[in-house]
Image 1 (cartoon, rainbow, N blue to C red):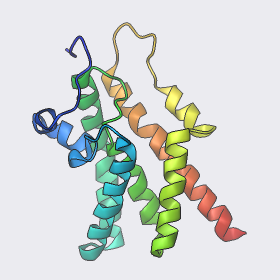
Image 2 (cartoon, rainbow, N blue to C red):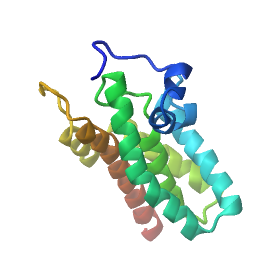
Image 3 (cartoon, rainbow, N blue to C red):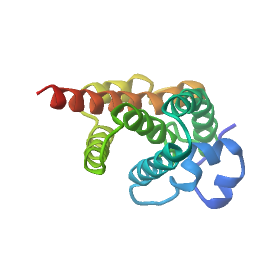
Image 4 (cartoon, one colour):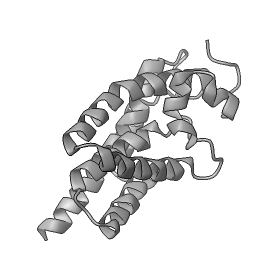
Amino acid sequence: MPPATPRRPSIAFLLSHPAHFIAMGFGSGLPRVAPGTVGTLWAWAAFAVMQLWLTPAAIGWIILASLPIGWWACSITARDMGVADPGSIVWDEVIAFWIVLWLVTPAGLLAQAIAFGLFRFFDAAKPGPVAWADALFKQRDAVQVRWWRAGFGIILDDLVAAFCTLLVIALWRAW
């Protein structure tokens, strides 16, 4: 049962359940200002570290495994916070940006920075299809929130933002 009032994220909350630790990006979702940007920066750094030791195929498998694990973690954490899409949940940004980086590499630092900027634009501004995906699983008028549905919605709009980012990059490369 979710709390009556939404919980503020804290280190104690982060460490109270493995799902919280994952969903909040290992702590990168704790900042009060721009947690999504901080989570995306963490994803970028983590991807750079993964590239040092793992093959692209292994990274792909990690991303694939991160999707259902992230869905579970986001659902549990949103439920425990009592908010359908809390800003401190950043695993959606992590997974989505890993997908972007995985598909644009090899890419130099400038290309990765452009991908970062595009992804943050699509995720924050939510133009067109990203807004549609964001609204698709919102449960504004629900008497009882379906947390598994909310967890999927948390991840879906970021996957669409990643797709839009990749589409812009592909169109740029083709042009």
